Length: 433
Image (cartoon, rainbow, N blue to C red; front, side):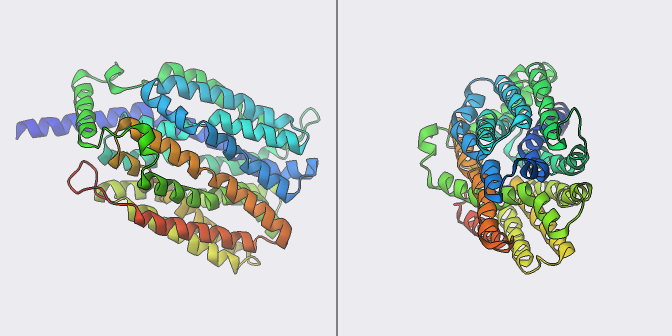
């Protein structure tokens, strides 16, 4: 009995120390990453007008980021597993920070396309690499909360993006428009944090001098025990042909298409439907993410507490689909739209804590790393599909209604398909789906 109490005490101390050391910094990194990825949504309010971009041009340029992102996802994620997370993350941040700032100097559609494409190449591997990195520090039973805390940076960054973007869009320094300063200034923190990552992050618990020896030994033993319980002999390349991995990739693609479509178009959508000033649009654009943040953390906690993953992914996606369907019938009622867009956004982000622990439940370490890279890489093509589809449908129909209905269909399909993921056998560590 005394041994069990002692182990429980070590476990709790270790979890708290790892959380305090890693989570605030990873949270900050992801805030900066998502801010640089999505700031084009606010910048588009001034960019499209100054450079004469049509909706189709803006939609294609916003989405082409994810085509570049697609190319290096898998090798980048595997490097985190077999080489060094801190070195790879630092490299990613340095290159994307420079390119994000360079976006503020574009003058043509072609330059917009190329800079967004290479920005995607530069950032490839960052998010799935951090998901793999979390698996080096958190047990399966703690991973849902860890993913939720980490991914809470997405709505947090977008809460900042609206008001900050609205403020910067109003400046006109040195003869340059506010949208240029928004893009140039928001890329700089990534460069600084890239250097800091090299010194602050630790690749694995075995190397963590900041952990007391009893906590380090307990964490290493727990992760090794979990690793041995999985189907650890599946190779990385074989994992990519696993039907469950392919299904999860499709689920993510269909889930991220409306997610990114909405986040990148939300400022322009609100402005065109309401006629509000830029600073008002910035504040309104933050509302959906303020709603999402606490509920996303609650979903991660509940998913870990119950051990259930699939329904914690499916229900939020189906809720998003229903909210977007209501939006289709309410395009002339701005406050109903804002309420429903907030509800849809809550659904998008609450689905993540249940979704991302799934690959680690039925694959070994290298196979899980490769599969997470593939799932995120293929799934993020939805980030191209969603924004581009909105731009095209807006040009061809003259309204956002058809685009909202299409995004609702994607969300419904994602929620239904995740229920087809085959459950792992009962009794395995963290395998209750």
